[in-house]
Image 1 (tube, one colour):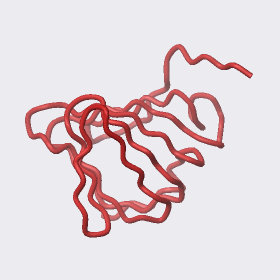
Image 2: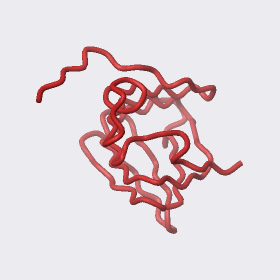
Image 3: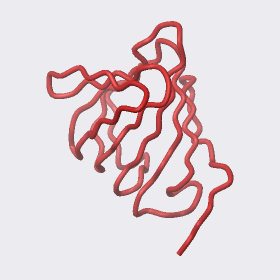
Length: 119
């Protein structure tokens, strides 16, 4: 099987972050995995969350800060980080003046109901 995606679908957000899903429930109606191109504005920060999927983030530009289990990991261009299922995590842009760009791969696919957000 081959499946080309020419453009993704944007998950609606109110915090300035852009989630451009190429594969997943929204764009390709696939629940097995999801792949999304992310753009986080300067100083962006999400509340803590616990997801019912494994997530790999892949840095493209800027620096994504991943905080979990007492660790603070900065993911820069060309670097990756695995966040395991059921891990309480906080994502943020480490820069207050530069956009952070990264890809997110989730297994199974990202779904809002598979993520519990605090606050």
